[in-house]
Image (tube, rainbow, N blue to C red; front, side, top):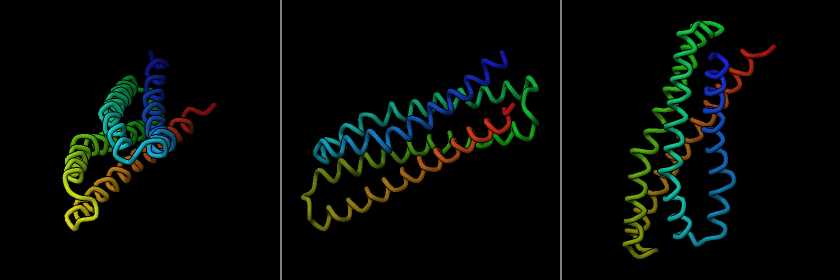
Length: 161
């Protein structure tokens, strides 16, 4: 059972950080290269709910498996287990904020941008707001990615032979 829990913990983390890497480094650049900006935005907007659902599921699996592993006494130390759980909770919190607060705001602002003439002062103001929301999303996802890499590194270090 311990091996299965460690596997679920590791799998959930690598799937989560892998999805972040794939979207940011492969999918989004290709989508925006091949499609018009408006079409690419539509495609990425359609991907985001699924992308964040992956984060929520992977975060829950990592958190639950970590808690059970601590309960079973299978951590190098309880302190290490608490650190892992704390980092996972932070990652989940960032993902929920990005997916449930920032994403809908960005979608709403993007819809507003489409309703005004490009190049107008109003468009410029709305476009700046969208860029700010996009920047916030990028920072949140980067933080999640870095924290996830740190957890994978920590697991590799503590599971060495």
